[in-house]
Image: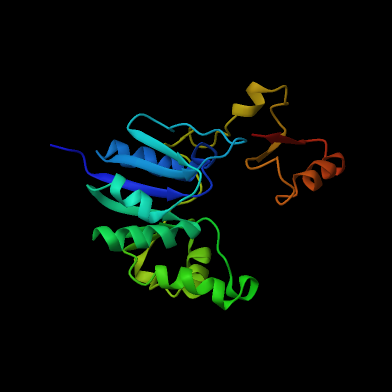
Length: 218
């Protein structure tokens, strides 16, 4: 029996740098789905399949009309953030359901009503939405005019769990780096190659931190 196929449209192309998305993909594979991810080709990004059972297709531009002939047997299409616009168009053409995974919200007051309209229209027939938490879910429901009953919540975290014994504090980074056992660790996971996350501001603040706090950048 042929595996059901889910196609994910992900403009950013950094699935390996997004622990939440990579975890969702791993779960889909674990549940018996074949997964294809269509992303923009980027020279400065690690672009390889996050796990077995996943085909990463890199393109110079994301064109729904061009992708449709490549996925005739798709069962589900998922759009990540603004890629919901292309995902909804593909799903409509192929007659399959589609969903949205949201990590970033574009607010109409920031981008303008005309820019927001395409995203709102694309979400009119969405089957489900995955957001990191209810606060952002409520904002997204308002901005994209999506019924709240369609929302599921998954934190930005990888696949799997870590369960230390009750009362025990994990010492993963203390053991890996020369950090005293009684010290606190602030873990930064995200982009360090752009100015928008203001990593430089974070780094410049470290000299003012208490001596029992250490910054680890992943």
